[in-house]
Image (cartoon, rainbow, N blue to C red; front, side, top):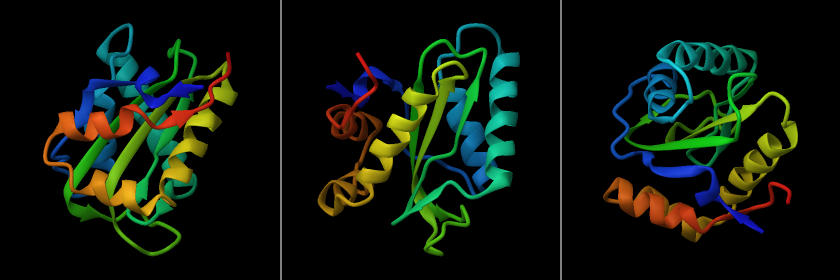
Length: 156
């Protein structure tokens, strides 16, 4: 069994996530990802995530969103997360604004890993106790430590 720490680096955690819009939140989280290559790759990824977001909200409910995209420039799944002090409108199905934003970037050639991470994040929304602790994290380190041990199955 793999843990989110396999795809989430401490440097990719942003507390606070100071963003008033979903576009700003996505931009800030893309900047936290360590993408092999140049800033140009970040811009491509940001565009892909925003395009995916325009096709339908990635708000999972209960104050959580998981914007995501796959890219041929990404060689392994990557995750960044931010905790917003002020709720952000992600047009979630439950109508609730979001404070916890996960950004998932995955290789185009590995849709299974992408889906497994999204499934783990979706399950996380049903774990009320953990979700409450995540939303009360006082620092990026605390948020990382809470998430690092969350399991997901990304294959062998």
